[in-house]
Length: 423
Image (tube, rainbow, N blue to C red):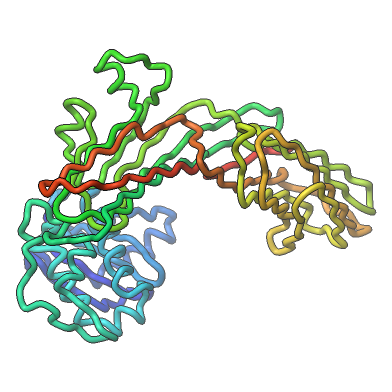
């Protein structure tokens, strides 16, 4: 990576924290960052990487702070940005909110963390759970909770401590899929994709090895099985605990897990998804008096499944007033600051159809609509269901003491960026 220094600046560009790891970039170089950023912003050429002479500034903004890494070399930019975002994540774990005030209240602990996060320009221990074992916090003061660095830091398995014990050994697996969908006014699907994550909550003693089996199409092809019920995963990303060489060889997801919650993997499927909740709308405008909107929602998923917390956001004219609603189920609410009606349905079974009618008054002087009407947005969550058909086939838990452990699996499909355009 080879980052020379890391700075945390306030919103005006004044350094709050500076940590020089290599000494090859003068610390005064940071004074050029904010003028350069403002100049590029005025020119409409703002970029995440700015250069002044031989010095490169790689920066991100979080809340009212800028986190900036400097380097003289052609460093691996994606690794630098990954480190900066990881630094934000660690600080948020410690201080709950990362903003100027939390930095000013915790100078000592921030410097301690920056010393552990990076050494001579290279990332070191970036797992907040491990850092909290020996950099502990009470109020705003730093305590030396342990006089020695825990062996975890120097272990091959730096994300899990030794000697963990539970009375009941369990693993909870959540398979969560978000559906991104864009449908045009003619009812044609323009964009359709599934973004999935597999999250684990691990309560296991010792140093167990876990093996997770999915209905992965590549695996089924390798082993000569039928591809009918398999899923082709794209853009697969794993937690650092997964043995990538093993996955590349035989598609086995093998790992020693961190303790507690973590995201094991994420994936994407570019596939034609049938809209799970289909929306039809009719808008009738009566000149200089009122507008009537009728919305029909239909659940196009299995009858055994139920969508929870459904919210349908229907755009209305910005000059509408005097709202009246009639719904066959749920309740409707006008949100004038967003120019939408939100139709909330607590429970929406598959195969059902519901109606909502809205009446609005319009001013006598009619304003012309310059832009097209925004799309209808839908939010929902369907438990015990995955739209891709992905399945956890098995979870093997191997630990030298030979204890029995229970894996629990839960499937959830939810809306991502789910929009339907109206005419």
